Amino acid sequence: MSSKLRLGVNIDHVATIRNARGGVHPDPVDAAKLAVKAGANGVTAHLREDRRHISDKDIERLCEEVDKPLNFEFAATDEMLKIAIGHLPHAACIVPERREERTTEGGLNVVNGYDRLKPYVDALNNSGIRVSLFIEPDPIQIDGAKALGAPVIELHTGAYCDAKGSYREFELARIVAAAAHANDIGLECHAGHGLTFETVANVAVIPTIAELNIGHFLVGEAIFIGLEASIRSMRKLMDQVRPA
Ligand code: PXP
Image (cartoon, rainbow, N blue to C red; front, side, top):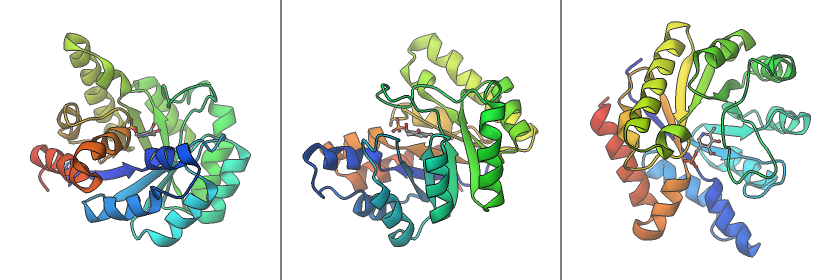
């Protein structure tokens, strides 16, 4: 705990822009390489069931062409498990997925979903892929992730980022407590969703968080200042509160 905070850059929305015209530009794999140059410690990509942004080919190329760890996000389905085991990425993050949602709206319910998720967590563990479960900052869910045998959790920071004033402080306190609890029971703790230049420092400063995964804001900000500058600025804000 409290070592240098890792940054995983999520390049899904580079693919969203590419797919708006159905061509090859902008290339999410080129964006991943630029992210590494700008200080990302890894790249995150979510292969959705409906392939709305990242494609199967993107996952294949990210594994082959990017020399930093890939954190492969997907929903717990047999199709996705087969793809993960076929590529053996460094890490897999299991997320909830609903076709009609615009983005991953909340965390997995790993307590109610124990029986459904257990075979996926076991198969990934047995393949040597580091498994994380994307959950709400709730101690019951954290204990549920531990019971499932996942070595890592990722806390959903969306409620904190969306909240205003004292509600935001309340949501931040939940993240602080959740990250401490995860550390106490031996889980590595990551966090992400909705983080921006404005919201990142309060999360980055939490010493029991090892990694942040950030995407939409970085790609949006790239429109104004460029992708490399947007990632470098985010990295700087993280480093200011968590020097190595
Ligand atoms: N972490 C996980 C598990 C995600 O699913 C996502 C994308 O929804 C992110 C982090 C990054 O979120 P954002 O794109 O809002 O930065």
